[in-house]
Length: 405
Image (cartoon, rainbow, N blue to C red):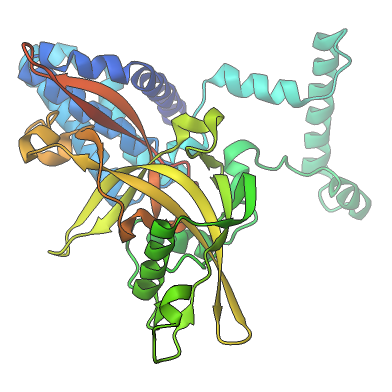
């Protein structure tokens, strides 16, 4: 039990460190070149470990990577600053992966002790006049109930009465997935990680909803309309054409209509993604998505969401399928490999940010993807390389996906 409380204290230390990281990340990268190579390695490995450990979904591979990076931090500190600088918190951090295996992701139960107590006390009913004695009475009543449960557990009348006293349901982001089965959430996680062999069309279920502002029966611009037809031709083993193309075809292809229901936001679980059509949510419109390259490797691309839309596809006379899609403009990477991974330390996997340009690729079929393929969000930051004639780039700082399972 004592070890468990020490782990809780360490998680509170990690919570504080992550809060510092989120507030100071932009400034920290601007001073990146002021640190020597050893300190850059310590910072890069520590931030990467924090990023992995605070994920709402964490698997064995991520736990092992986070543990190895924290171990690198401890060894770098010991070798360069002496063993006396390896504090108990650094040592206890090596047990975080074990703690996650025992209790689940840190996200699901981390918090300062007094914050947890304030949440519990704040949920209890009171008159807002004599709060202290009222809360003490409630605590004494709960203690009495615990005594009754332990002494008279087999009393049938008491058992029926205790059925009215239920544990509080989960709240906040943890409660966003209570209505979904584990298998559904697991498959959705595999979809946005591109770990399924099936072709995802956008008609599959997802733990979320399309949100206002909503515009019904909007005609897509002709350029986007043609891209939508190309999207369906790649997603299905059928022939799809525009209305104009159906007049030229000798076969009987499926005609795609240009009307869609357009949305400004989308909610996936507890997370809201914005678009260019929602000024209040402009900071949430920058997303990441995975793409399979020609050599079968997988690359992550940052993009800017223009809008979300639902499109009804009619296959045959009776079958109607609704697809939930998103129109995105994708950023162009930095001109060379070395510039793109400007924050690289030792190996490519050690970087915590990438350098991209502020320009977009030309609009093509890849600009339309299912909402299921959204990997997560990122924070764009201005970054300049060079002193005399600095070149302005965009630093991509990924945000952990708020997806709990």
